[in-house]
Image: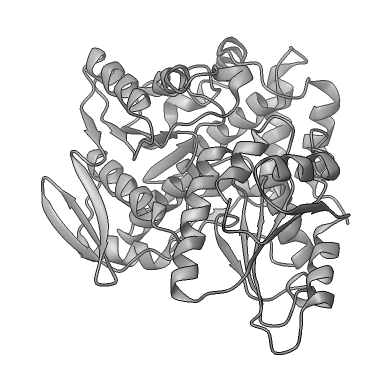
Length: 443
């Protein structure tokens, strides 16, 4: 496959600079200074952190702002198939992934400004986002934290219009700490004095308390899910409530009850940021929102054609125990609507808690096929991953690929039997590879 100009530039950077993360703000601050501090020339910024749900909340926030007729830049990470997905540039009628020549040129400029100094590729790519967003007009920008918060490269934004901190759970313990309250403290590092803070639906009271205490110490107005705003389903509708009253809404396109809470956090964040949205705009946004690789239904494509005919196939890049819980709950909802046997195809990387991820599916999944994650050097060998699934009480076996797993199911399926429900899960690297192989990349 021919590489784009931007991909070639990024690969060049990867040969020059260390892989991974090195959490600090000194290098990115130095680089941005050489670029004329583009982070200080952005449109109003919504800054979003959290372990799970921050990407979905960014997608909801974008949909809300665009439904109100506003133009929006969005920076998220990681990407699924193409690096360009990380940079959505504002455009009338809806933002577009950055054009390849525009991205390549920005990467070259940032690389030249860095002048060979020690830096991580993620920091360079974050500087690229600030440069692009400062040079293209927009009404707002949504910036997703990459890792943690306090020392994440995005945390050079001096005064966002609102911050959102979504559910915090154990993940990236080597960088952020091995207790949920330590991780919450790192993510609360994006809070700025006097800037509104929206606290999403937290599984842990300890995490919630750390975030609220940080906001109060900094004099930042704080809105907490379940206390200051909330959402629930009623008669097939989404009901959102805050101090301004109720909104009776179309349920979001993104499946799973956890998306009700993500949608509510986005609504509260956009309102706290001062953008005018009413019931009509919010309802339109719920129908328009999209976020690939998160409980995404694959209805057609090259991989879908390999499965038993009529199979229901879901793709999710969730990869930690907290994500496992919300995915299993979403699948339980699907089971209530229409019962099917559930099979899992899973690939994970070594930095994730594999056994506790699998435990979320105990009693639900008939069988697990474990596959390699070829797009990451940290991929867990499929035989080892199968052992972790068995440790969690699941039936599991290693297979060579997603294609092999789907064909094994197809060849063993009896004619007349209700087609299965298949979950492909465990890593965003795997989700991206599946979308690429299926011929359905994000657009």
